[in-house]
Length: 185
Picture 1 (cartoon, rainbow, N blue to C red):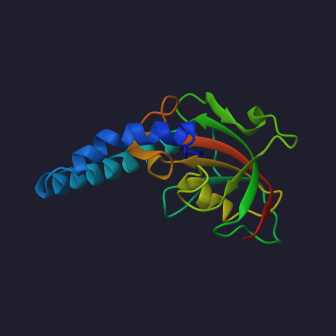
Picture 2: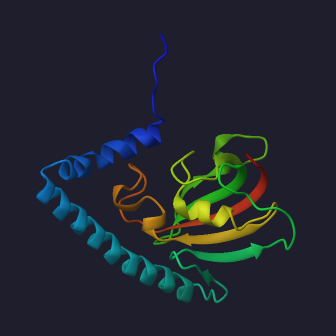
């Protein structure tokens, strides 16, 4: 008999979100209040994350960062002017290094998976394949061979739940990314 099991990262995120889900599952008045408080907290962190990102840019003399309406910052390292871009459902192969903005410590990298290309494959769609919203937004702007550095506010990363045990709640992140290739759905 086969059983279904979530990947370890998904299980950890679900356990981290369990207290919030239980809180929101209470009576309507309490859940409405909790939802409003969570929304307020997220909005507060958007402001704090933006200040953290701007401080990082200033400290590192980065003046060519493109701020998106969502709060994502993109620093183009190599940008093709022609070619297709991934859409929802595309399978993207990406080389990347993930770092904390606060101390530039590396917490993840595609080369760690041992693949021949040193890349990892992801589905370009929010909530699938372990891809954060900041990645989805970025990948939809990239063409094969493009390289970027993105500074991702926490609401476009792992938000209030974080990604235990490595990434805490409300943590803005930095990724160096290269779109190696992609296939359309």
